[in-house]
Each structure stands twice: as C-alpha cells, then as structure tokens.
Length: 399
Image (cartoon, rainbow, N blue to C red; front, side, top):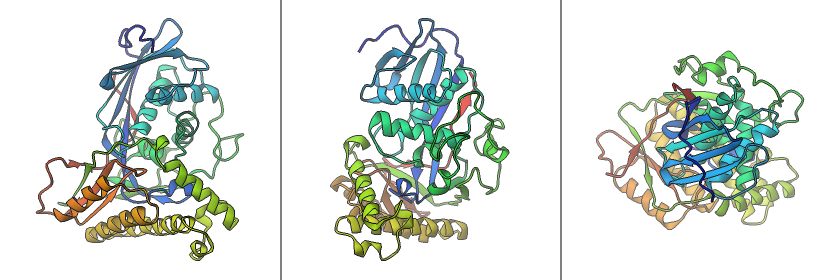
C-alpha cells in the first residue's frame, strides 16, 4: 500500500469521536425489524481532520500502524479497515455532499473484533469529522445511521442492520436505548424510498429532542425519557452498586467472514417460506411450519424481541436479578437456537457465572468476541473485566 506523506500535518479542521456500544439484549433482531436494547459506551474511535492540498484522502490508523491514500471521488474498493474509510467517503459523496480532501488521523480505545462495534465507532467518527471538515452542519442522525449501515453492507460485505450505528449516534449517558428497528426505517428522507439516504445539499438540523439526545447542546444529554427520534426510546439504566462488565473471550471475529451473513440469509429464507416481509410479522406458530434450522432461527428472534420487553420492564422496576435472568436466557437462545457461540465464549460465560454473575451473555454478532456479565454488590470482578456504562453519542470535540 502506498504510504504517502504523514496524515498529521497542517491545522486541525475537525475532531470527532464515535463511541462503541454494548447491546444489553436484542441480538440478531435488528435486521429482522425487531427490538434491541443497546447503549453507547465511553470507549471509541477519534478522528482528526486536516486539509489535504493534493486532492487525495490520506488516512493514518495510528494504533495499527497502517495508512491509506485514495482519491476523494470514486475511491477504488479494497479490503480490511480501509473499506470502512473509503465506503464512508464514497456514500457521503454519492448522497450529494461535497467532501473536501482531508488528512485523517485515526486513534481508538476499543478492542477490534471484541463485539463492541469498533467498526460503527469508526464509521461515525469518520462521517462526523468529514462532514464538519467539509463545512456541513449537524446531520439528521437517523438518516446518517442508515447511510453508515450501507457502508457495512455494500463496502465491507457484512449484512448488518441499524443497531450499531444508531446506538453510536444516539447514545445518552445513564440510559440504554430501546430501538424499534421497524419504526427507525419507516420514514424516508424527502424524495427517497424507505431506507433511502439523505437528499443532497446541506444536512438539516435534527429535531430539538434529537439534538438534545445527541449532545448538540454542548455535549450535555437532557435528562428524562422522551424519545430521541422515532423508534428510539431512552430507558434509564440505574445499576446502583451492581456492575456491568465485559470480558474478552480471546476469539476475534470479523462479521463479514463469520456465519453472520448465513444467519441473515436463513432469516430471509424463512420469510419467503412464511410469505411475510420480515420476522417481525411471524406468529408464535411460525417455527413449527418451517424446516430446521430455520425454525430454530425464528424461535430465537421471536423470543429475543420479548426478552427486550422483559429487560426494559426489569430496568424500570429496578429488578436487576430479573435482568440477569434475561441475559442468561438470551445467551442460551443464541447458543442453542441461533447457533452463533464458540467453545471459548461458552467457557468465558460459565466462568463469569461461577464467579457470581447474576447473568452473562455473548455480545455482538457471535462466533467470538466478548461476554457481558451483570455482577451484584459484593462479588469480586475478574481481573480482566472491563466495566461498561452508558456514555454519550458520537460528537464533535474541541479542536
């Protein structure tokens, strides 16, 4: 790869942060028009933009010692982390936004492939930095989430849904976000079909509630539980002396190369056989009308949507032992019905329960990554555990 000149020269024009996310419950439901309960975390990716005077995009991923150089218009396709960066530039340009050539320096605090959505954090930080660098205002964040999910689908080859980008763009300190993915995709941009990207031109300012939720008022999230946008309901995550932690199983996963796309294809096939548009429309008897493993996949999705409702009710009631039971049930379903676990993940979850966790489950797309565990007061955390708590949204930082 041509290294080119270092990315870190010249005055900084924009600095943006994209947070990772933890999904409490609601796994593999987003691309099935279902319910999810994620929250943004305080770890993430930071992108610093400077002018590029030669018309080229120059990127330096500091943590992995990697560079990329490509044209700002019609960048060629590549693999690896470069596909995320090029995809963001290409799709913003395709949507009609003038993106100025930039030198971008990328740093992060998220482990890659650990199920904490380092990819969405990178996309969000890149998009916000590039838009600000290019003179655009605050974006419509729901539309931006849809555009960034297309980066995963069309440039990376991972058929993910809207969960990760939405959590990163709408994070709220002290809150999880109950996402109704069907509602998120229901209202198109002006002149676009559902799921379309923003119309060309200056990006519109979001509604007041969305701006407050996104930290547009100086980074302070507004208290309360008013919707941040259609399909997004903040839910107070008050743990008291309880603690949520993640523990890395040691198995890295790349969604595009795992069985993730196979699971999505199985869900699409189940919909074809049932004659419905998405598994959100499946009835409780639907699994029995399908061959295996499709029946198992549908049983997981139906039950996982209900577990999101149970988790929200538990949080509102302050019933944290019940939340732990929901985590355990979600893990069992992902292992037995959706079949996305691996031995190392199972060993990690079992060890956390043996240490006193009230509940533990794999997070992310599966096939490796991290395990989320809920520990009651008085239980000692394993040394490698990383405490996680709801943080703010992707945002611009002072230069």
